[in-house]
Image (cartoon, rainbow, N blue to C red; front, side, top):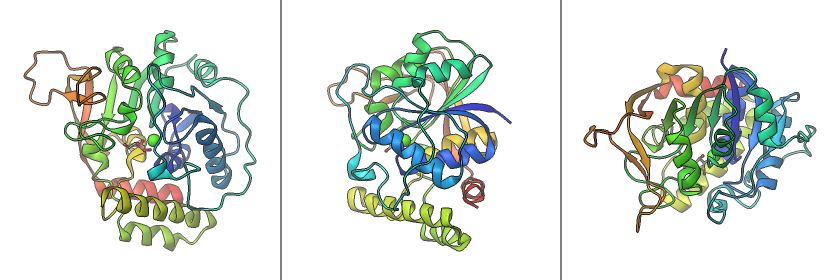
Length: 298
Ligand code: BDR
Ligand code: CA
C-alpha cells in the first residue's frame, strides 16, 4: 500500500480522514497545522482521535501555528470551540512527537511518500520550500472549480493560506485537487448516519456523535440538509483512484483579487494556454466512498 503522511487540522472531517488513512494506507506520520482551530487544539484533536481509534504507534507532530502571510483564520462556527465538538473524549494516551512537523516529515521523506493534505497548506508549502525531495505526489482537499464556502469564491483551506497554496500548485510536484466539486457529493445523509450507528461499537458511537455535530453545524451555518464529509475524499482517492474522476488542468491561486483572494482559478475548458499543473477531481463514486469510510469505522 501507499506510503503516506497526513497533514491535517482536525476538525470533524479530518478526524475521519485520520481513521480512513490509518486503516487502509501505509500511514507513517500525522502532522498538524492551524486551521479549523488553533494549532494546540488541532494537535490535541489528532491525539484524541488516535486514542479512541486505537492508533497508538503513530508519530503525531505539531506544525506551523499561522499562515505564511496573513492572520490565522479558524472555523469554530463549524467545528466548535474545541475544533472537535460533540463527543466526550477521554484524555489522550498518545503523546505528541518531540520533533516539529517539518522534521518528522523530512525524516519520513527519506523514501518516496505521498502527502495527503486536509488543512491549510502552510506545512506542505514550507516543506517544499526546504527542497526535501521524495514527495511523490500531493493529494489535497481544497479549492473548487466554481463557488467557495468560507468566501463566495474561495474554499476554506485555500482561503486560510493562499500563499501556501500558490507554492504547492507551482511546485511541479504532481497535485491532485479534491475540492468542493467532489466533496459536496460526499454527503453524510441520515442513511449514512444510520449505517454508522448500526455498527454499535464505542468508536462508531464517537463517529456518529462527530457526524451529528457536523450535520447540525452545516444546517445552522449553510442551511445544508446533510454535511459534506470533505477530507476523507482525498484519502479515499489515494486508497482507490477510481473513487474520483479527474482531469489534468491548470490551476492558479488568486492572491490579489479585490473580492476573490483565495479562489482556485481552474482552467477547465483549457482557454488560457497554461500548462496543466494539477489533476482536478470533478466526479465521485459516492457508494464506493461511503463503503470505504464505513468499513474504516467498522
Ligand atoms: C475544509 O475546511 C475545513 O473546515 C474542513 O476540515 C475541510 O478541510 C472544507 O472547506
Ligand atoms: Ca480539514
